[in-house]
Image (cartoon, rainbow, N blue to C red; front, side, top):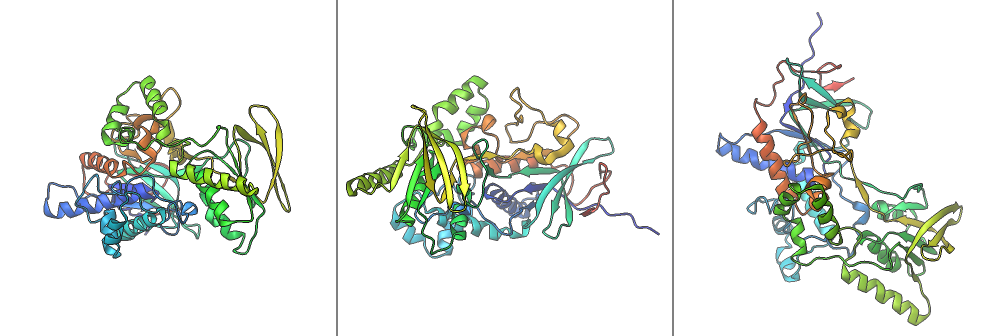
Length: 457
């Protein structure tokens, strides 16, 4: 007698990715279950998260020694949503015995490495909700008795190649950012993206004495890479290549920073397409291709001292672009073109580093045939509701939520830490309002084209 496969347990949400945004969501789930224990009116939501990395990690390649956060520590994973939470940055400092030292430091901007340690501390406390080394490779529909897609199966692959499915009434995409490269550029042993800077430097060995680097980009990361390489390798030349005349300072003034407030999301979301484009243009200098003024001063001083000493180890190729790259056994030759004159100059170096930014992940890449149900705007971008739910056809009754990739609908803060805590609260409120049946049941629901079972064949 053949037994009927049992459907997998149904979670209220399945999270894809476990970076800061979904760590904050896991914390929100835990805190909501704590409230539910005391108040039966509060739904005790359940969730599981999939992360392809073997452990928590956030831009590890840019955890440079002296790099500081660009946002206040008060914009951590919880404080703006729940100031009483024990998951705040100050709670972390207290737990490691460094609270008074930090207070005496008189800063709102901790070291990036310290904030990463805080994020890892948070992730460790909600580790029971995440499956590491679990790479999501697809999403499949689960239809109810009326034929509507009421649940979704998230298919994840383990390191041994086996596949498993997690079923949810809602899924939350937080895939993070993918390194962006100029058209035609390719990564190699000598051509890097700054996302992997420290790992790449580690591979060349501690005793390496490179003769030179070329760094492409005009933003904060590019400037940090230039400064780090210049200081770390005192015998190397560092060439900075960017299309601007010079580094542009970031606007960190109080009024400009209001663009990152939760109220600004409401204003942006309700604005016309023309107004949204204007707001993004007006406030581009708060985040895009801009550099902290103190770092600009540091680099200028270093370049000036080079000139005084006659070394000129730090060289800036402004109003320029990379016109070609040729790799050889001993290094790379980068052809730098002056945009004003058209003159091309070959620059010999050991390594080329692109610090050219990132692009957000597109949920449609994992949705497969479900992508045809996603509503798009005139520019082909996903339409997103105010509560961060992906707009879909009526055939999909479950929720697909986005953490990231919503700058065109929700504004500049979508890809930053500034609004993570508040956004998580809004998503949880939306999911709570949509919760209709207890977790762990799947009556009259079966995946389309696949048996309902915990292990995907």
